[in-house]
Image (cartoon, rainbow, N blue to C red; front, side, top):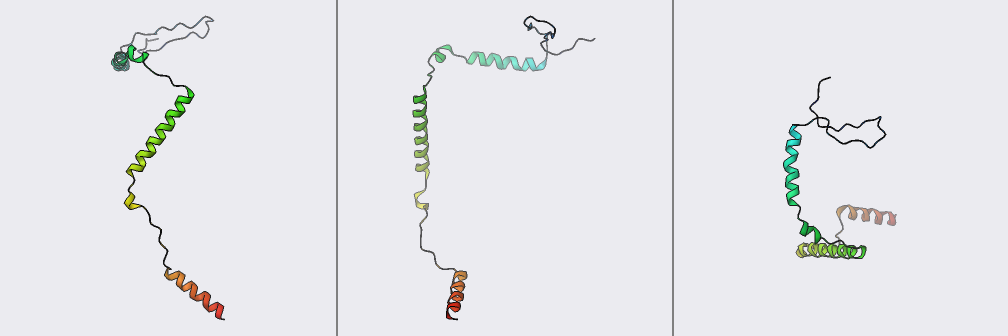
Length: 111
């Protein structure tokens, strides 16, 4: 059987011990070559002093923060509202169809 160029890990189905994790074939795969710079870049982005400053909120603080965010969103929405374009409710004028309908009704009442 010819050796394959895949980067896989083989587990023994018949072994009762913990599976050994070792690559079956050393890979020169292009996918691995593309992923390596990404992983290296992510490692460089890790900053331990900043990770120590991270805040973990309890349930009450989380709800208070959510309420503050909602009120800020509402304030922004109201600030963007165009007050000059608010609807003005005026009494409706009777339409032509309504006028004909009232004429028909009045004729029936006369009869």
